[in-house]
View 1: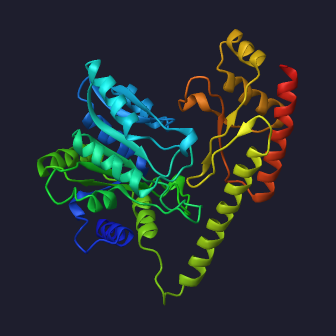
View 2: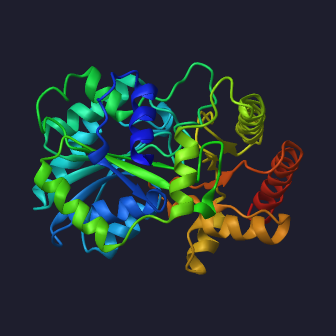
Length: 367
């Protein structure tokens, strides 16, 4: 029943006809992370297998690829173009890996982005699905933030819908794709329930059967997580006694996230020495920090990355905990950090002000 509800949710989300999502292609998981691990385990047969990942990227991918002994093949997201990746960059990255003898068999797309907070355009998503189809790459579509889109002119556009619009789902195996969703994000934020699912599209049934065996070896997804996933995809309907309250609570949470996304994005951009691309989605922003030359030298002397030095200083002197951007990967010579905006509006205003004061003091210390 739960898998059937997920199918109807996918069809409604993407404007597809009933039956476009198949129950046997749905795997319920303990959050998206267990599904990601399962798929990468199957894809990485030996140390020569490569997985294309965005840079910056969420470290579950780099860490899991390392764990299974595969090769990370990074493609650069362009900060000057709203954290998008051009087809030229995708082709460059793939060709370079292949010239080094790496057997690249899969491609990771995170949309909306983590840690970068961008929401890719339909054209950009279609470019990716066409690229994966052209080069016979399994597309891993990390879409766990699909409800977290804050910019009015943006909308979530799934890879499944992109494949349909590009005509890639009309022939079997024209594209092989696995999409992931989770109850940990969105407006529920039920991280501890460990609920989620993955949908396999375009695979030979024999491959899907092998994935079923692998999933079965982990036993079933936990029952509270399955129930939470059902609630996420099949909430109260108009006429239900809880519908009005449910919608009101969702709107309150969403409106608050929109306001806080603007507070941090606009706030950091007003700080001399910091710059931040507009926060369009997910739950994070990824500002760039202009680092004094003496701070870079001091970090090297301590065996740290410059943004780690900055993050430790921010924690010790302002009580604010952020993650150094170097932990996600970034262009050489760029420094920054990732932060979330989940605390209250009042707290986020205070955070921005404390970052402003700290940055001034930090630069003065290393001038």
